[in-house]
Image (cartoon, rainbow, N blue to C red; front, side, top):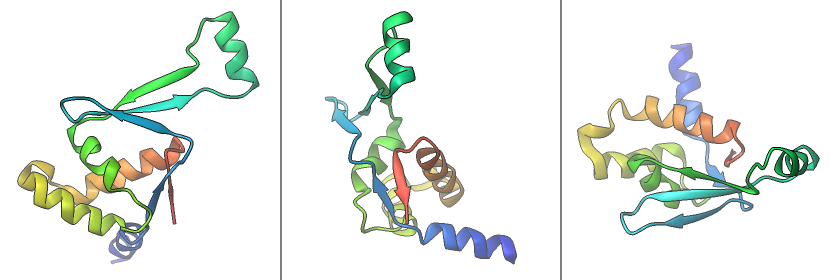
Length: 114
């Protein structure tokens, strides 16, 4: 029961995209996030090790569907309903996958959960 309470609380969180992250959409609808590598260490790595100034992260089909829905108003449960409607059984286990997806996005600083 405690695990369900924690899971339901997480699903009530509202994700907001990081405004510093740009993105593009290709002709197939795949979203690519554009992350600028800032800071002293990144500048040194760019000069010495020829690391790129901008990193590109290509989202999968479900990630490309979810990213534009993240608007700072819908909670994870509402986003999950849209994903379930669009992907159906292909998205299951839906909320476990979404919870992990948003945990990863938050850990990299791509979204903020409130």
